[in-house]
Amino acid sequence: MAREGRGNKGRGNFKSETDLEQRIIDLARVTRVMAGGKRMRFRACVALGDKKGRIGWGIAKGADVTIAVNKAATKARKRLIKVDFVKQTIPHEVLVKFKAAKVLLKPARPGTGIIAGGAVRTILELLGIPNIYGKILSRSTNKVNNVQAVFKALQSLKRAVKVERTEEPF
Image (tube, rainbow, N blue to C red; front, side):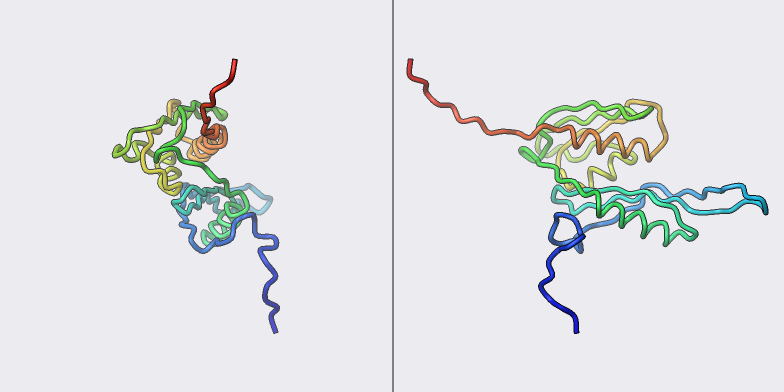
């Protein structure tokens, strides 16, 4: 008999993980040279998002594609972050460099949509942010580094604090 009411032990800070959409950003066949020849494995980079401000990514290797994707998705669930929107966009512009990848994220007016390409677009779509500009400024074609740069940019966003104006007596 299974016990009920054990809570969310060991599954991160978020209640529901079934509403997460999963996308494969990069899938590569990698080899390692051994004494008997080459050993092939698969490397998968996966992003998860609920299109409501939660996003995560993971990278893993496995003997089969499905094993690699499942391991990467498990890692992504453990690394979920929450991003706050301000008027359906980000609060301010941010430029981030991670290794050779440079990524620029800029707020956009309502109705603009997601203006971005490559791995940046995939991340922003899974995030669910309606209006944003994203640009990869470097010539880096390494999708994994571009994803890490986007996450670094999203984590560096300052929260918008509503300041109430009060009259100070002189």
